[in-house]
Image (cartoon, rainbow, N blue to C red; front, side, top):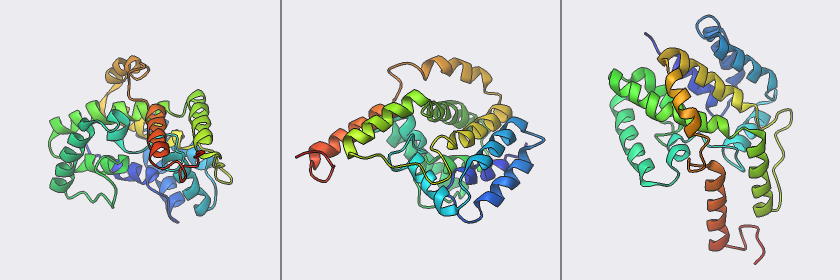
Length: 236
């Protein structure tokens, strides 16, 4: 089976450039017959994103980088700053190098890089391990962060720390990228039959002890405040 479509899925989550819309439309056509649920998610995504590339870039940044809802770094989603993320990065770096996969200046566990690695892996056992133990649980946690209640809590924390909240990009909203992540999940679910894995993990990702992006964000802001109270925007 060819997994070439994962390269195009990765482009859906890359920082968008001028050709983004055309490539996303081509992805919709590519997935329409083989992965109709994923194609529908990409279609909804395209209908909801801003028309201007600059606005879409701002939306991407607001969603994944600055006052973000989640991160695209798989290892951070799963492990935070735990040593396990370091081990994952080391192993992924080896696999990217072995496969000749260009990480484009991002870390080895950046989701688009992981997606591009999949069709280049020749070891099926390694591929299944990457999908079942790393990619699926990470995607589930990323998607969870778009829950309205969790968004509200994160925004409240950002506003408290930075004294202001960045507005969504013009013509878009910060939840639209959930469609892109859902599209990836639908494709993975169809290609690798991970329904049982997802069912098993559904309870796990809702447990309090699961790595919590909101908690990680709050921890980082506390560290920033204590290290430099003036530049953090907090009262000195």
